[in-house]
Amino acid sequence: MATIKELFDLDGKVAAITGGARDLGLDIGDVLAEAGCDLVISSRTLASAQKTAGELSERHGRDVLPLALNVADHAEDKQFIETAHEWKGHIDILVNNAGGSEGGGECHLFKRDPKDAVNLIEINLIGTLHCCQEASRHMADQGYGKIINIASIAGVMGRDRRMYERNRMKGQPIDYAAAKAGVIGMTMDLAGLLSPMGVRVNAISPGGFGPRQLSDGFDHDYSDRTPLGHMGRDGLDLKGAALFLAAPASDYVTGQNLIVDGGFSIWH
Image 1: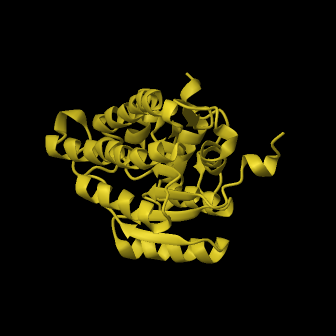
Image 2: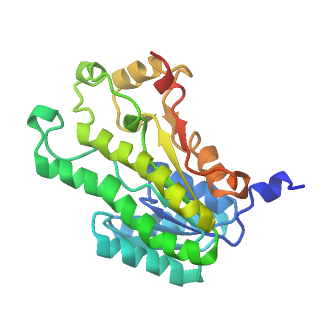
Image 3: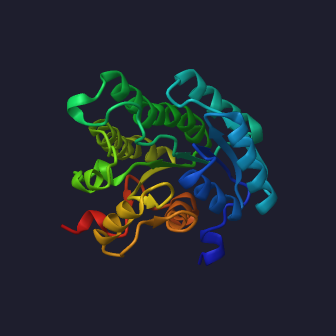
């Protein structure tokens, strides 16, 4: 019978995390390193990845390899995965976290520049697909692997943009919802393809996390709209979900989208 320690032990595993230098990516790297993982983390700038790598290595005594990565570039995605695999000779966990809704330019559909929409989709969806494609080759050869795609509740529900308007915020563009819905659909189909090869594929859909640079008004409005009464807390509220899906505890879980939003998406 497996013990709790065995179910959540990641000693000797290698996890590659795109967008791992800050915010939710940093939280995921922090909990996986504490559970025993060596890490490969990326950021758009090498300096940012190096800073976080040093902090995580010192905190947990694990090896952390920092790399620069633009996930919208297929060649860079391929090189990122190859470098991660060659580093220790295996890649056991891939977390596709790079992305975000902060597209440039106007966010309203009527004013949205098509180039901005395409760029956002390339970062959030196509980059995730490319990293899955490259990492799953190695995982299939190993006969084991975990892929965790960070999606969003924007991919499963429409948003009341009056909350943004009241607080004079740009809001999220429609193409962000399209990209994250694509990540969720891709996760399920990838699980169907890869699970017989020993590779589990799941998604996490966070709700709003903050408050970061959000206004007090938006934090209040969002929290009031959430059954648990607050936004997701950096450094805390995503860690358990990420560890569960990365660890042996979830070896019989695949093709799922775990929503971590304090109930935001269920309250109408």
